[in-house]
Image (cartoon, rainbow, N blue to C red; front, side, top):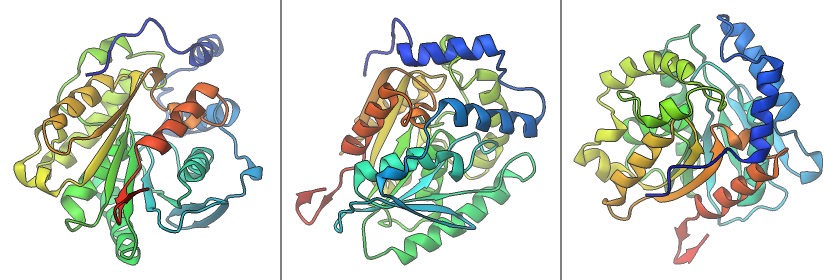
Length: 307
């Protein structure tokens, strides 16, 4: 298991956390609408920004957006992406700078989905509609390898779609980026990084209270996968962040899965916080991490050669 203790957050993110304290940024104001607006304003100011010189083509529709990089490998996969935000925050528009960076690094299309948000909609409503869209796209893309990826709650949603919705063999790989994996246990990282590291434990507790009943009703517990689930799971990658309230469950899952051949690809960034991918266009540490994720977490073996 990677080293789980760090002396400090990376200095670039350390400066951001200091700025949040000085600006009096709170994890929650008590208003979902205000919290959403504040989160998007923060990222617009301090997160990544769209770089029009990257040459990417972006197509938008009612389900989300698709990024086609300037240079595309015709033998590469098509990436379907589920964004994080606790099923409460964010949108594919907020994620566009990161998705463009990822698509360029992969030389592959990245198609990201919007979904209905809580508390205006139930988790069941949101996931069922999302499942319909993802399944339809998988059928349409059956002639090329498909990678399903997601960050935070998007990682949990990716596991659900992989194990409960999509037919076995649909996906070439699943990629989980600082994912939500344990809806039962608060591990040590909840205490160490529960406040001031871009995902506070109180926010995560609220997200968990909404998510847990849905996944329990479908007998999906990522920390206790059945033999049938393990047999359905395609090749997998997991990315963990060292200064993240979700760190310990990600590390525990990677260790648990390491004993199951072929085992997951595991990338660990010890001095980065939750949501670091959203800062890839602005902070060098995040940009380097996203480049490493593109190089290491997504590769496939297709027709006898590595992609």
